Image (cartoon, rainbow, N blue to C red; front, side):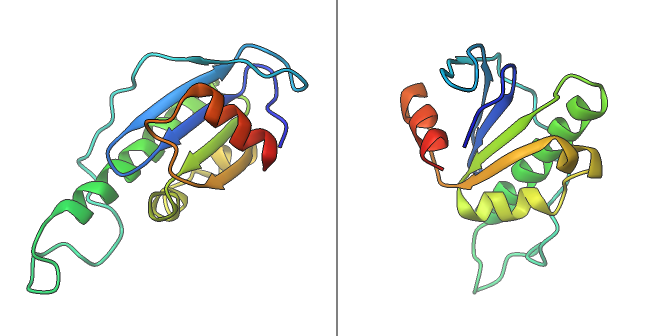
Length: 134
């Protein structure tokens, strides 16, 4: 997959979001880390797991869904504010599924691609190589 110049790459799981900007071009991408974004976890996701039970004794999944919903809300706002023209999302499979539930149509319009893989905690080179191979 090509990474357009100035594209934003969001690398996420249920707890961590790393944002990068491509300072290079499509043929020679160079991802540069961006400052951390504030993520609201007020939205408790869209799943039906809002209460603890013997089948789900912890609230960790709800917290991860909330983080994904908050991540989507922040990305939606940046797209609507004109701060993102091209976006690639690399996320853990379950997180990616939750993110998709919250995409605004404007975000979908600038979405260059999605990669269902957990790369949080990996090097920038790993992210670049994974996108290039996709």
